[in-house]
Length: 280
Ligand SMILES: Nc1ncnc2c1ncn2[C@@H]1O[C@H](COP(=O)(O)OP(=O)(O)O)[C@@H](O)[C@H]1O
Ligand SMILES: [Mg+2]
Image (tube, rainbow, N blue to C red; front, side, top):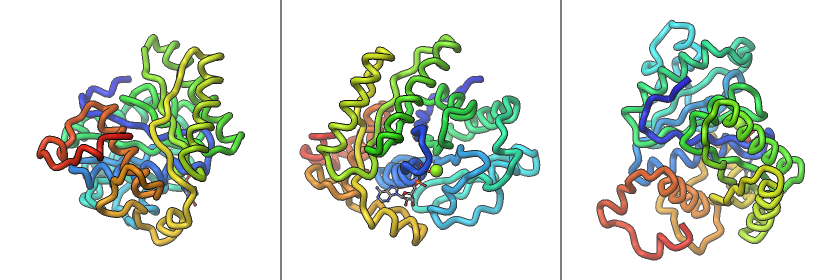
């Protein structure tokens, strides 16, 4: 299977359920959109999709309709929601929840075509290390592995890094090491110490050293935004010193832009201040 596209594809995954993968994928995509990127957000949690719920969307068609041949994938795209385009999935569809190589291949082919209209594709993924997660992970430009400081979540993030590495080896691919996002932390210190411990275990047993791409504090504003079905990122975020969730997310978006090697429109137009770059 190939993702025959030069457009960067970032997969947000993480191993454990409930760590904040969808919250991060949605808000990262919206923030990238605010930074001037043309973003396609794809719900790859096939069968239990909820990106549309978090964004308050009511899409006419889900990915499922396209895979059944009822509509084209392009017709499923909800355009201009919070500044981004969204490809929503279906929820509670048993057939979609079952891994199916042929169906996945059709989806990837369609996505590769669609992605040409964008600067970046962000995928939200299911929990676990099932065939879909591994296949989408192997196609990604890079993987963001989301975890909380909870030991069970950290263990699952380790399991994900390990499984992705093994999958890549089986395919003969040299995939980049996933980057970590620490969610629901009390602050930078907890994020850094948790990431350092996880990176150390990965170094010892997997000869890989995942770096910390960013962190987001546990905040009632995040869950409140989810209840209101709107993104939590606020416009004009981006202060480097703040530990507020919006600014943390803006720094993560900056990091993703750098990791993907895509042009930053704000920089291209000379609109960014020097201090925005420190800590990026
Ligand atoms: N930083 C955070 N602070 C507070 N609540 C959060 C935070 N991140 C996620 N949540 C909440 O945690 C729950 C699970 O998040 P979700 O993104 O659906 O996880 P996943 O996609 O990994 O299953 C949601 O209710 C969400 O609002
Ligand atoms: Mg989710």
